[in-house]
Amino acid sequence: MKKVSIMGVQYKIFFNSNDSRLEYADADGITDSTTKEIHIAQFENCPNSISNLHDYKQKVLYHELIHAFLYESGLDSNSDWARNEEIIDWFALQHKKIDSVFGEID
Image (tube, rainbow, N blue to C red; front, side, top):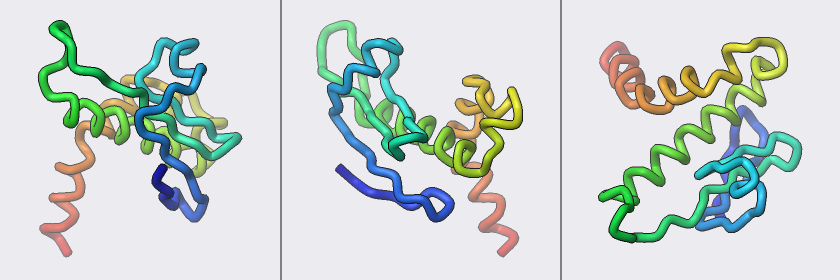
């Protein structure tokens, strides 16, 4: 388990989680804003598996962290776009590029 601060709120991240909500939601990761927990599923190498599980696990983690930021900012409860999985994926996939541009300016 790892802990991170999301907008001043402590979240626990559980890697290789077997939390039943993952299976129920048919998800590789979940963010629970009520318990302040992020669960990332356990991934196993198998013939039909994604070739780079480490990169995929990072992608899932970034996606769930974006959910947590939007929950803690209040946007999740006040807008439809902040719950849109497509938007969450976009932010999760593009955050490094955005950060790089901000770094160039500073």
